[in-house]
Image (cartoon, rainbow, N blue to C red; front, side):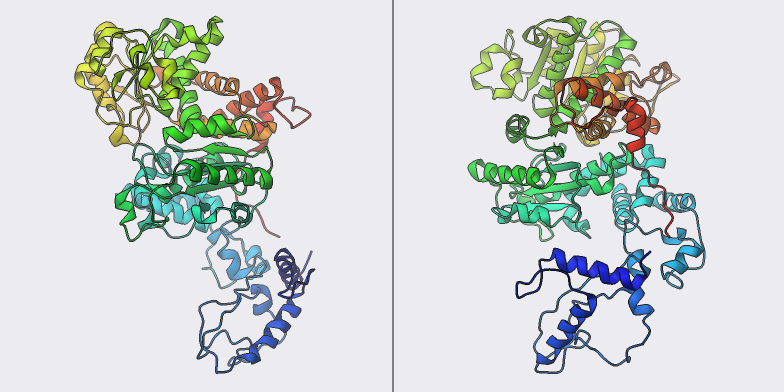
Length: 639
């Protein structure tokens, strides 16, 4: 085992080597003593008494605290603690072993008061912490107590992000143990408000920012990230954050939140996750005029300029991380989301959660609903309010599953599915003016302009809202659904809560408690006629963490639609009669890591079946293998 002094020297040498050698173009390693010699030699050239500069060199905690010979208190060898008349730049040397003060500020290794007595002695922590030694469980209990004191959800979000930057394992332990309570804090709906106010609450950068200013240098930007073994990237350009619109660079809250769930719910290692925001400007005037906005202040780039940057980014990712890194597109606007997915699905391992993840979890909810209302997917009629990424993505996956079950052509299966957009029912007479991704859903029917007209004419058994517009499932619409369905299926999926097409209470009250209901954001239990209904949440977090884990453990090189169907079918199998009796068609999130392992196993099995998996030989028991690969946030003991 290296001594602390030797480890510090070795680490400094490796850092110097990574930096590419000295200023004169030399290469190779340089010892700490050599670094010091050069810095000391440089000091005398300063013409005046030195002046304080904010860039401070951090020596190894072990070496400074335990050197054999103490330096005189007044001596400032490198001229960094007192100001020269003319400020000269200094190099922010940061070589140190993970010991002492440095260890306490390393979120990957910090344990706070949970460091044992032995660890405190071995890593020079004695005196840097209060004497008490506590367990990780007690730390979780204390932080949950603190979080519950906050009345404003955004305050809880900020506290959680601070914890993640301070003590990574404790953050994930807290989230896993209290997932149902904290999921709405780190994810929807609170993350929406966090993105709106991201500039104001910004403390430390999380993830990578690639902007138009980096064009031609994207590869260098990616190389700045300290980790090399990246398995999952979540990337957004911030143009369509949830139902909140263009939030530009402040959309970073979404990749950060999604990847927190990849780790907590799916077990993907935190160090293997990389959140990225592509900053091409924003058309949000409020943000452009906000002094705290953290992005570039210009109108959003489009066309060739936009796609050239995206192409450079995608090529750079593949160059650095290889073809088996999963790139999840998140909250891109419709016109870019479909184009990017279509363009890169043949050359990269890409997945769009808004199109494919949402579709997979909603399909699972529908398959689960059939156990309550009866019939098969093909025997039901579907009407969507909203024909964007989510709506058309869900519709397509439903059609694919119907085709799989009935062996009917996909074109025939689509005829069971109707979509309403901002101009009314999508019908053949509108086909010439429709965007390409809507044309498949134009059927023969007279034009209708309102949702209520469409409901009364088509008489759907399933009503799904993906419009992003709150309260559009009016009392008249819901009562019409209940008039010709004994158990109407109503999914109000838009996020955040304020944009939901209807509330759980409205759905149950207006159908006399007969609705089979699910929502995108969480709603509290509803009491109707003496019975308590626990509404299910059609949350993508049921799918994408397990899906990503399955892709990673199989070494898949592409995403296939059959992998999404496998994930849906596996999730649908997890709902029990106990859940149905309470009014929910989804299993509780308390079992989510077990569910994620099962989804991962199904996705991996399908990847092997399709010949897309590269990790060979195939494990005999994929579910056990998935569980064995999952990150656990229990503290590790340090030598």
